[in-house]
Image (cartoon, rainbow, N blue to C red; front, top):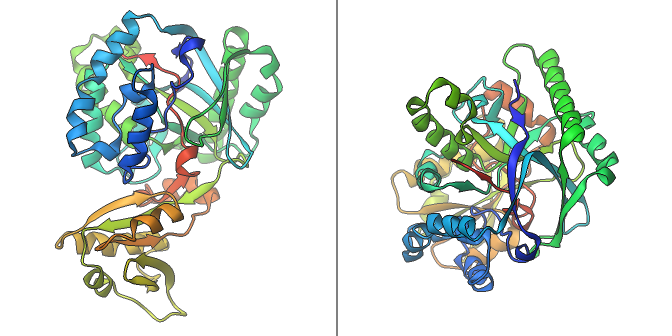
Length: 409
């Protein structure tokens, strides 16, 4: 069963690549000014900005205006023939991060029939953390109306041998270079190489060998791949596919483009994969009352969680008996408080960004520790998932930028 496979990949022609790629729409969600700056840069240019909805604009006057232009813009780009089609291919990606490290990726299509965003699950492809169901409808609405997809989904394999990417890197001189450019807004540099023909077949053999090793090592219900980023977009894709599937005949169910979602596969074990904590930011809240509601234990017995607000900063000491993960303890108490009191929670990727947001009145931020990436697959298999928004793969500007696409119809 090919659960991650080659695809008919679309890329803009070289003359349209300059401002094409923008960062994942779920980044800078509490910083609408970031997206306002991006909008100003790409306003009259071909760009994936016009094909996605920044989450910073949800529930604002910009949301409806921007969303209703997404499908017409897709039609416009197709009619103006700005794309090149690379059939039955993979794209090998080298992303140079701001620290100079190169993160490797392989763009292909995952089979949504092999993916389940519910937790716990025994599917070959699983979410790493609990899915926030209320975040699915907005994405599902966009995908339902779309004829194209441009993903920010990162799919993780857990390959200590790193066989796939070592082989690809050793042979990249034989691949066609598709793009080589700097990304906007401090996003680093990116190169993409076309893998097709016999080289594609070799990649498929390596993917199959990896899955066989997983099967041998894990036994029944092996976990082949976990979603590193973009789980809610992928959950929306699965939702739309489940709605469409009953309307198709048996043959179409096997081959329909909507059954497959484009994603970038990466190896969890590669040195460039850095896990960053996702901090908690709460606005429009009574800071004093919130802090008073959180039970604490003695300093030498608890998890230390630092917080910051306009009123000052300090440390909470949380009971480790509640959960082996410090985040799980904090999240439990925050959820309980916000269920009955005013306050809006958000998830922030950088310490500086959190501190700046917390300078506003009636706001507080909690700094979270980083989890051990080596425990990720084991925890998912044992516990079903991590708490929502437990970790981030790199800083916000290092998230996947929208680049490759494919047809959905």
